[in-house]
Length: 147
Image 1 (tube, rainbow, N blue to C red):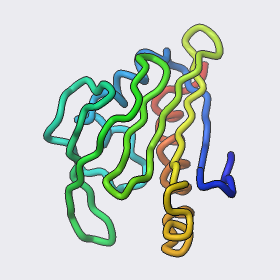
Image 2 (cartoon, rainbow, N blue to C red; image 1 turned 180 degrees about the horizontal axis):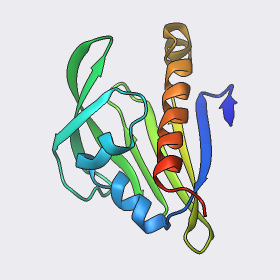
Image 3 (spheres, rainbow, N blue to C red; image 1 turned 90 degrees about the horizontal axis):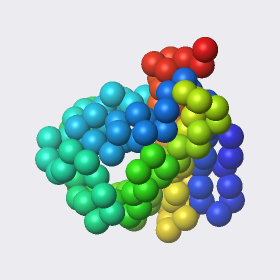
């Protein structure tokens, strides 16, 4: 677990799946709700089914009982290794997949809010996003237990 002063929240978990299998879920925005542990992602209806750098995708969200939609832009996509996108407010969500043994992967999710540290701390989004990441990774570990 890492919460850095420079504006990043990072959590990792080891799961019983290959990096390519996990990357395929993250690279398909229509599958993001399968992973989400925060309860904010309700669906993705537009955008490509295989994200690459420069791709845009629209996400249906719900926060504080209010539904909304936002469009994110993929900033990095290395198959089987990394996926990162920029939220319209400028922060980044990043996924990293590191093989640890055959059929096992360390998954790291990062919320990078270094562009507006004061805002995200003042609004409580740092803590709530940390909880969301922890719930997402717990859900992933439950889905792909390490044997």
